[in-house]
Length: 300
Image 1 (cartoon, one colour):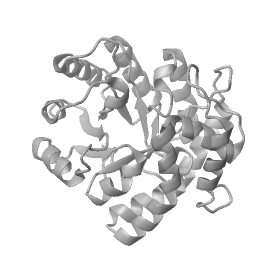
Image 2 (cartoon, rainbow, N blue to C red):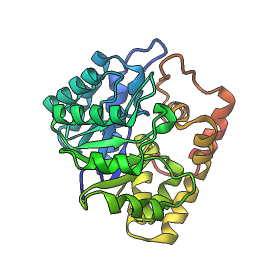
Image 3 (spheres, rainbow, N blue to C red):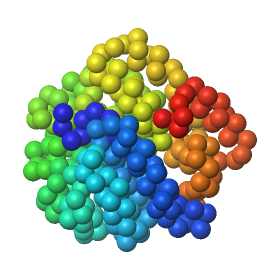
Image 4 (cartoon, rainbow, N blue to C red):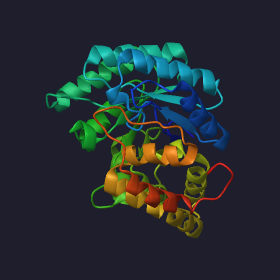
């Protein structure tokens, strides 16, 4: 399996209400993930608040993760930045710190052209020298990668995978066939959007880039392994347990729900960085009800 295949668990970057990093909480979240045995950790993705952190803060978070993981689980690091030189600096830093892979989103204020995105990825991939995954997340970046652009990028050294959003028409089989027809056989195609994980994996996607695995990694592992083994009935049963959480993700956004979920699980008092606000208390009862579908001493 490639670095970008299987289950990649994306932890929160735990911060308090003043915006200070809570390293001890991040360490516990990472240790929970490692013990569940996913195929990789996806640090500093959207769930990890990368867009809200300074370059210095991001490098610090990376060092905390490296110390916890100790090489036990491959580490993929989000390096998206508005400026190409900053993204390249983060790519080099990740390589020097000991990460195994990179995740790059084309952040922007000015709307980027396809040519600008191609040049950005070419420069950053060369700077890091690590296997790099294209982060296709139009909901936050306002840029959608065409199949043609993904194909062009897949020809570049080090660009080995793409993290796709859920297809609007739900046709995973068709999209996977199209992408595989224009990319190398070794190129990995995975999906985010947790409520679509079941369908994506059963359709043959190489991986699931999972938000919920940042806090419920063992349960996400069960879903991943069942789906990748083509055990359709078991996959459906496991996915049904997640449905109340999927509904909350769709209604409030997975980012906010994950902070509330973390506090219901562990009571650490973490909050998203401003201007994002925590979910209102009345939503917490629904989160508790969703958690009731999962059993185990630590909501594993």
